Amino acid sequence: MKTPSQKLLEKFGAKEPEPQPESPIEKIEKENPRRSFLKKSAMGGMMLGGFMFSSLEDTLAQSTSKVNRNSAPSDLKITDMRYAVVMNGHARCPVIRIDTNQGIYGLGEVRDGASYRYAMFLKSRILGMNPCSVEMIFRRIKQFGFHGRQAGGVCAVEMALWDLAGKAYNVPAYQLLGGKYRDRVRLYADTPQGDNEAEFVARVQKRLNEQGFTFMKMDFGIELLKGVKDTASNSNFWDIGRQWTNEPMTYGSTEHQLTQIQLTDKGLEILANRVALVREKMGYDIPLASDHYGHFDHNNAIRLGKAVEKYRLAWLEDMIPWKFTEQWKTISDAIETPTTTGEDIFLKEEFIKLIDARAVDIVHPDLASSGGLLETKKIGDYAEEKGVAMAMHFAGTPVSFMANVHCAAATHNFMALEHHSVDVDYWMNLVKTQKPMVEKGFAIVPDSPGLGIELNEEVVKKHLDPENSSYFAPSPEWDKDRSWDRLWS
Image (cartoon, rainbow, N blue to C red; front, side):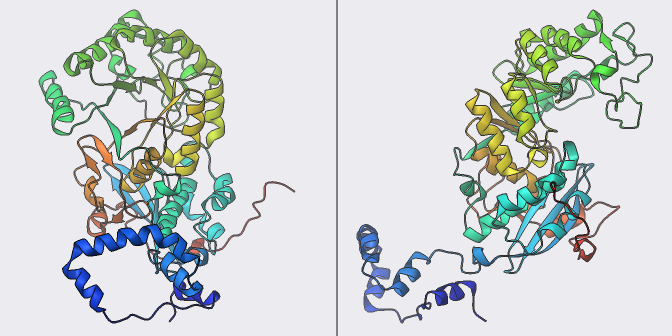
């Protein structure tokens, strides 16, 4: 059976050189490493000129000596796609695997809380294609993504393609994006909760001193006001303690501006005091961002922003839904604290609207919704041209985490990446890596091909979705394409 590299050489009328017995000079070089080093240094300078006078066979043999001979990228084809739903704490995170005709595969992840179906129905549309044609495949499938979790399938496939392409060319994914700006990626973590102030302080100190985080984020939503008299108007109609519901006509499923909830001065004081407590225990050296305030309109967002201005927060996040560009601009123009949104936006176009309108100070994509590695880098690059920084939202398994790390390493205006699973005890063990994934509040950028991870099957199998515990089972039901998907006539 001929390898892909042997087939490639045959196209040029060449063949791989037969292994030769060790020469006397090679024996001497083994015994005298200094002589070998000097010889290799001299050869390096003569190599390019030497190619001009070498035979084609010798030139190909030398120039492909470090190529992964198990892979001929131009001959790669996608042969299969399968999935396993991994539990990340309480959140379902479907992981997909794209297989090829050469035995190498790529891993991707559907965004936390989304369905594996968003990815699997794309299988029939990519079978037989070359996974190294990442942008072409992305153009073919991006019509099937949308904002929020519905983008998860497209983004999972895109992640897996970069993993495959990196393995095929034997380079890290960030190298295919143009190279890296940094060896370590700054992370930010949530401020942990506590049953009392002493427990809260102890947990914050663990984040800072033991776990080494240099950037934190806290929530101070209006659920803190539930049942407290005269803190929020219209709270008799809406259950302000249930922000995370999605049933029709509930508080959780109603867009912020439509609830008609207003905060009183008493309510604002309670929320500001919560921020003051955290600032007191952390100090001002550490950036402290914020999120999850509840559902109220842009006028009350401005009042809240002004109430906490003196605590110099790193940002106020998702105060209203991302799509209301003009209202975001009104908020940002009225307060001093930086504003950010974007974790639910799919593709760069909506980010461009926010950036061009100067509606936010920081863009905040979630790579598992924004379009994957390349699209997120494009978002960051565009933002940088307009003087806007980029932070990154993330709440999944190490598969998506490492996709984020490669993108962050390759994007110049990157600020910090969210690490939402600090307290999930098995999270780090879901994958195997050559370097540690996280050290003292920073992700370590890998040198390994692709995303630089392999699943730790033994651990993953212990943490599969109890309602769907299959592990990359065959998926022939997704093989056939039964629709006409062209968007024009």
